[in-house]
Amino acid sequence: MTRVFGKNATELDGIDVKILNCVNRDARITVTELASQVGLSKTPCHARLRRLEKEGYILGYRAILDPVKLGLDHIAFVEVKLSDTRAVALEKFNAEVRKLAQVEQCHMIAGGFDYLLKVRTTDITEYRILLGDVLSALPHVAHTSTYVAMEAVKDSAVLE
Image 1 (tube, rainbow, N blue to C red):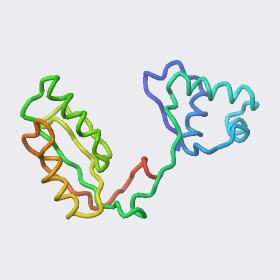
Image 2: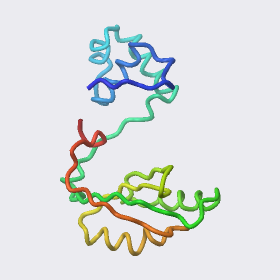
Image 3: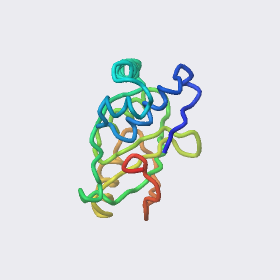
């Protein structure tokens, strides 16, 4: 699937976009194969790839693990409402939530609650303990609401 990038990517030309799409699909692609796919010779392709890394378009490369095979197939989305939303309170909450391996994603939300967490655990029992002992005890947490995912219809972080 080809990704279309937003307005902040105005400094990218068509070749850059092709390179980003290729490495997004397969981070282990060789420079030779990448050059072939984007229509460049190896040296200029390698130079563009390094420039995209240096400029921060490519943040890094990693293995994508299968959470189901690892027994981490229970996903819950958690709305978190804080009792205090001043900068110091937000910083304390953010610092603590970053330490939790079970929290796969944390987003500050504009709406009826303050944060939306994606939490991955082995099962509902582990999640219940995490919620009661850890998430609810995070700094300034006033209220949480949990929504358990029944099926992942699309998860680009795992597979396309």
